Length: 258
Image (cartoon, rainbow, N blue to C red; front, top):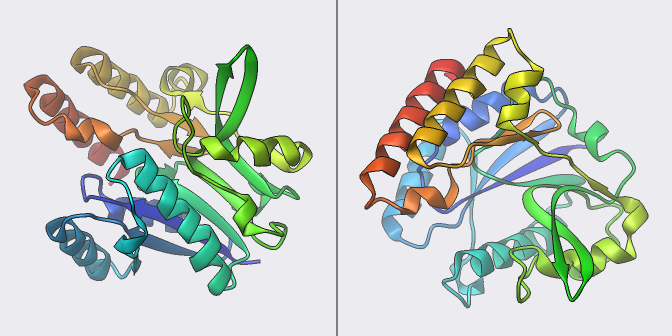
């Protein structure tokens, strides 16, 4: 079965071309890599189109009429539902992986092995509400076997009060508990200690030092897939300390990964 990697971009703050290169380097099975251009502003939309065109990356425009809210969490949820229920279904996709655009492999990865015989393999969130523990899909990395997903409408990445994007998937997780695999995310500090003596451990150690000194969040790794954590922190552009930290992180990133 072919793997389809869906990466969702609302801006060009992270080097999409490097992410694409890392997937080509480390994913050891047949796959297609698609950037879903979900930019709200025309400038960002054109910038993403230019990057994907120059690097021969397939790019799909997310129809903006599907959005009914400017809230980033709600907008991302709507896009994910459209990608699964519309794009993946209409294009006959087998296994899809939904992900942020700042996620990429740092070692050999077989996505088909990670998901196995499950309907879904995903990073998750845990919350306690009304004294009850709740697990729902955290769609930073979410792999779905479309051939086993009998009713795509049943899987909902929408938000719920007190829960972020993916909150409504709690009912799906409960109903198909034996067919949903939770991916464990190992924080950067753990990787820096677990792989002492290797270049990747040195990278994480240096990156952690930058994050600590500039008040930024460091990344994590799940099954060989690294979440850099560029994310919404880029929106805080009025704080000099954050800007300086982002610049140092990116310089270090390019040193090790480019």
